Length: 232
Image (cartoon, rainbow, N blue to C red; front, side, top):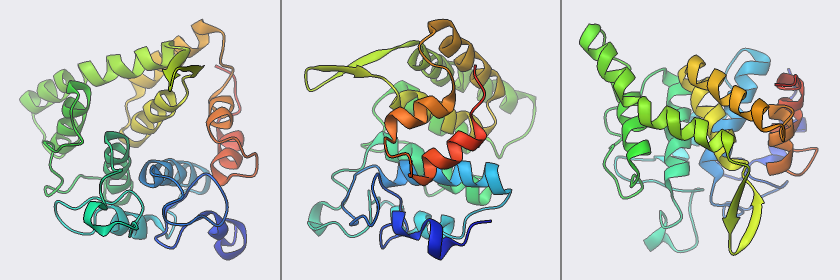
């Protein structure tokens, strides 16, 4: 296992969240929670145990009930959650599940960050995982219909428009992988990979990681290249 103080520590901010570049300030990017969840997913797959920064990341993003931070103490403390988003809420849910294998009850499903039925259904599903029984099984599978279809569609799509520019759509694909791997959605992941293969644009998950995280020395890229190098 790599020595943290030599290999990866320079990629984390002071609040133990990872960003796109080395030696980041805590405001380097607004998606620190999401990137950190992707990092911890890959770390666990590669080394078989949780990274010691996992608990620190959770405490940074969700220090107390009802408070959510994109990357720790932002400059304007009166609007410290202004840059939080449903992407980061997905990251937070994944961080909690990676650490505790359940979602704490204090994480509200109905927040200003959850505006799409896809996210409402998915976060409700995450809370329902702790319940057993046939009826709970049925409810959980019904809740997954919309999120799973949304993930498959995202993997089918090639481009999106941002600020008037047409760019390759990779962020939704990586979020689909994060959700599927964290919560064991094997059938959805199988469909996602079939969609990616049919489009003939994508060769592997490592290629998609490499497009989004452009630096070849980024730890997420390095681990993805070793784990997800096989073609679809």
